Image 1 (cartoon, rainbow, N blue to C red):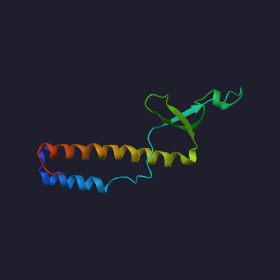
Image 2: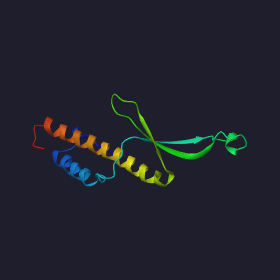
Image 3: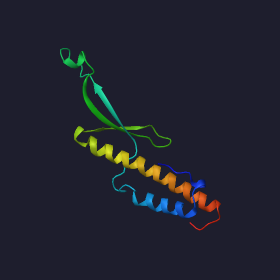
Image 4: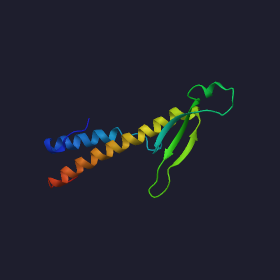
Length: 114
C-alpha cells in the first residue's frame, strides 16, 4: 500500500496524504505493546496440564519503555480482542504517520508548500 513519493506528482501526493488522514484509527483506541499468549501448568500432581501444554491461553500485555524493564500485565480473556484491536490501531497509526512524513519530506525537497 505504501507509495513511492518521488515517482508521483505533487497533486497525487497531496491527494494520498488526505486519503491517509481519513483512515486514521480512533485515537482513543490505541495501545502500544505486544500481546503474548501463554499456556502454564498449574503444578497440581494429577492435573491434565502436566501432560499437555498447560492451562490457557492466558494473555499478557508487554510494554517496553526506553531505559526501563518491559512491563507485563495480565489481560483477562474477555478483554483479549479489545486489546488486539487497540494494538492493531497503534501499528496502523505508525504506518500512516510514516507515509505522511515521507510525503511531506518529498514535498519539502521539491520546495513546495505542504
